[in-house]
Each structure stands twice: as structure tokens, then as C-alpha cells.
Amino acid sequence: MQNAISDKNYKLFIGGSFFSLLGDYIGLAALNWFVWKSSNSVLSLSILNFARLIPALFIGYLGGYLCDKYNPKKILISLYITTLTLNIILFILISLNEFQILFISALVFIKGIFSEMEPAVRNSYLPFLVPPQFIYSAVSLYSTVLNISGVLGPAIAGYALIKLSPNYLYLTQVIGQGIILISILYLPIKYLKIDKNRVELIKYDYKYIFNFLKNKKDLLFIFISGCLSMFFIYPYIPMMSAFASLNNNNGPEIYGNFLMISALGCIIGSSFVSFLNKKIQIHFIFISIVLSSIMLMIIGYSKELIVIALGLFFIGFFSQFARTMNRIYFQIHAPEKIRGRLISISLCDRGFIPLGVLFSGFLSELYSISNVFIFLGLSCFIFLITLMFVFYFFEKRYLINDNK
Image (tube, rainbow, N blue to C red; front, top):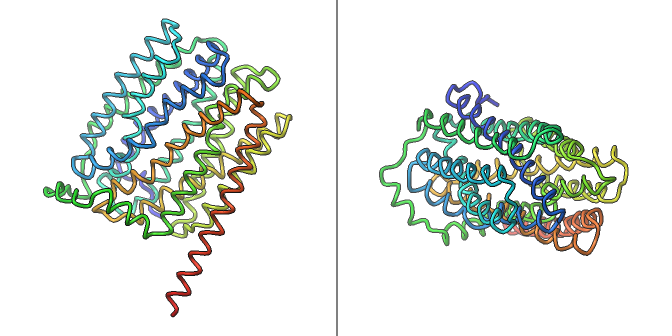
């Protein structure tokens, strides 16, 4: 596999992305800790993260539509300018120690609308930025940088929160957003030409896209498995501040360490995908999500920090392994004429995270977070095993029909 890092434009892109992502992780950890300490309520955390992530359920379609119709670089610049402005407003609110969960959640929701358009636009922009032989490497490297930021960000935030107030840490998100904005201004549209008749491609509306997805059973089942993973597995991340604090009254450094360990597993998991190259098969994705659900049950059941840490590492590994394979599988099977919108549909599985977070938050009002984790892991395990049997039933039936 050829390495995208050898491309100078991709170096600029990935460098700016690193600082932006690092700032995002530090800022998110600081914001969650600010809300938790101001409210001491798991439900408040759930509302915040529901508002932050719910736009992923629907707004990605708009991002895919726009980048199929217009210059994706210009769209990225517009998105980064808007999110930078909203981050500045949030920084001011945190600095003033103004805790109004509904107002903060409303701002986070508005920011989420623009942030959740970014992945579809960015993924559609990559083929314009790097040559075709670098796509595998470009996607995998971005996932690796994402998770390196996920290791460093929470670790920095966890230890810094001992000495610093959250507003100083949230400032890093503002700075990081400014850096990616500056770097994107210098990036070209190089390897694919933007069709002057690009508007005509809109005749492939979303009805056509959904029919395409419906007829491609492999993509459909991968998408469903991703939705299940996002709903049942990924809520453990937004709830980690409460889980760490309620587990033997641990402080912010344990919270940061928990997130760091999980993200370290994510780095290794996303990097491991590189060794598969084109040998990405659906059963790898299914099995990885099943193993993630088992890890979540172990985290919820155990009271030992070392066991919890190992569980967090492996849930990070398996969940990110499945997620990266999911993204690459859609990249290589998406026709150019509908790439933006098809990828936007695949990315909207993230919209199930806030639904899972809100569901988990309500459960946490009735049961302990540990029991909620066990319930989520067991539910995901049952649904995924069922989905695997259904998929292999369809696959076997189609093989029989093809041989007739």
C-alpha cells in the first residue's frame, strides 16, 4: 500500500487536522467535565452529548449533497469558519462560568450541524487531494491521527484539569480550529476534475441512492451494524466522566487516563486495518463489533481498575477496527457520481450515538452506570449475532440463485 504521507499536500492537510483534532479532544473533555462538575448529573451529560451528536443523524445528507454539487474545498472553508465562531462563543460562556445546560446544549447543537457536515465533505474531498493509489492510506492515516489526538487530548485534559479551569483547555479547541482553517486555504483541487456539469449529477437523488444501498446487501448490512455499534457501544465515551468519578470517587486524572487508554486501542485498531489492504471482508466488521460488546460488559461488571483499563483498550481497538473498515469499504464501493451522498449516508450512523447517549442517560437515573454498560453490551451482542445470521442467510440464498 502506497503511503499518502509522501504527498506534500496531504502532509499539510494531516498536519492541520492533527492540531484541530487535538484541540477538539481537549475541548470536549473540558466541556464534559465542566458540565459534570456544574450539575453532578448524568442526565445533563446525556443532554449535552445528545445535542452535540444528534445532527449526525440527518445533516450529513446535506453535506453529501453540497459536495456533489459544489467545490468541496470551499464548503470545508465555510464549515470551519462557522464552527470557529461558535467555539469562540462557547469559550466565552465557560470563561464566565455560565452554566445553563439548555443554552449550552443549544449552542453545541448548532455547532454540531456544521461539524457533522464536515466528515462527508472531507471524505469526498480526499480523492481530489491525493492520487487514487493513496486513498487507502489517506483514510487509514486520518483515522490514526484522529486516535493519536484521542490519546493525547484526554490525557492532557485530565492532568491539566487538576490545576487549570476548563475555559483554558477549551481555548485549545479554538486555536486548533484556526489552524485547520489556515491549512485548508492552501490546499488544491488536484487529482479529480470538478465536473462543470456537476449540477446534472443531482438527478441521482436520494431515492436513487437509497435504492442503490438497498440492492447492495453488503453495504446495507455494514451500515446497519454500524448503527447498532453507535447506539449501544459508543455512548460509553460521553458517559466516561461520570463513570470515572463515581468509580471510587476518581478525579479528572483517572477520567483522562480512561479516555487515553481507549483511544490508544483505537490507534492500534485503525492502524491494523492498513495490513488488510483490499482484503476487507464483512465478517471482520461483524466480529469486531461483537467483541466490542463483550468488552463493554466486562467494563461494567469489573470493579478492578486494571481490568477496566484492559477492557477500555480492547473496546477501543475492536470498535475502531470495525469503524475504519466500514469507512474504507464504503469509499472503495462508492461510484464517483454518488460518492458524496452515499458516504454521507454511511456516516449518518454516528447519529445513533446521541440516541444511545440519551437512552443511557435515562437508564442511569434508574440504575448504576456499571449496570447500564452491561445492559448495552449484552443488547448489542444479541442484535449483532442476529444480524450476522440474517446476512449469511441472504448471502447463501443469492449464491444458490446465482448457481442456478
